[in-house]
Length: 137
Image (cartoon, rainbow, N blue to C red; front, side, top):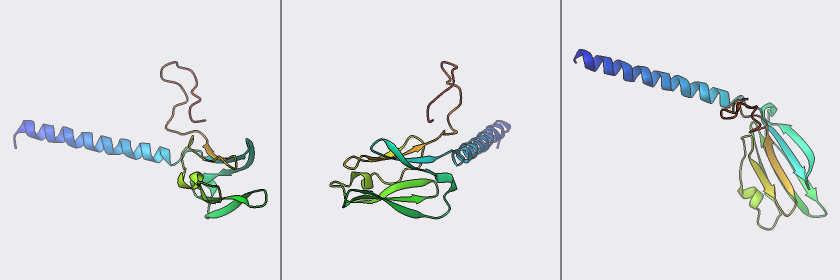
């Protein structure tokens, strides 16, 4: 192996190590995001849940009239509509949500489950305008 080959191998090794450190830092910041699930019925907040503080999996039911319902399942860091008697069950099919800005909607019963909070991947300052960023809040 020539001296130039050793230098190139060293540079490539350093780039790989730096990339792995960057990936680790990026992923560790993702896990610290603030995630508040806001459940709204007909536009009114009926419940809020801090998904980072959930210890055990649980379900609760939101009822509509005599027979309408949506079951909502909550686990640490995520939430979903697990059962519903709505005609097409679209809310159930949407699956788990876990990131700020994501939502699940059951249109017939006017139910919305949305995750609010600030995603730490986003900076507090907009890179173009230099103004405070409201994205993800």
